[in-house]
Image 1 (cartoon, rainbow, N blue to C red):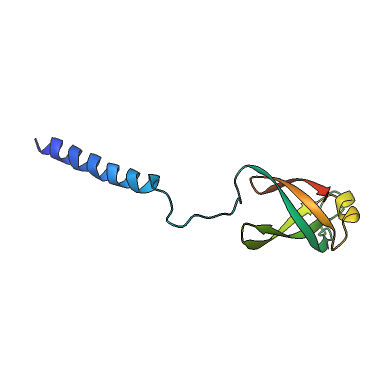
Image 2 (image 1 turned 90 degrees about the horizontal axis):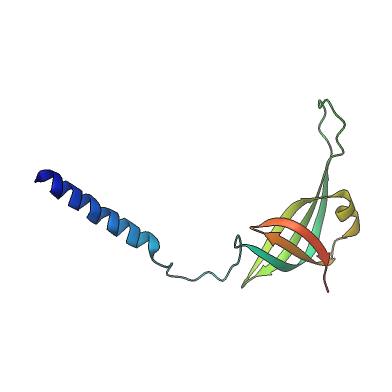
Length: 113
């Protein structure tokens, strides 16, 4: 009998926890960050090159980064992604671009149309 009471109590607690997890957030977030594939209009705001660090057994060319500013809902967001040397050379500061993103990972950079 006592085993049945414990089991029923455990099921009741589990039901309350699952109901709490399934409820919607009280404040809707218009941001689309991290939600599948999307195209974001952005502006290049900074370019950065990180020189290779010494001590590696192979010759590294360093890492190129582009920083972007974009609108996400009502907020202004800043992104920084590692890019290829060609992308780094092609997009100067102030360039208007479209970022093709999938789950907040950069897939492609296109000139804004």
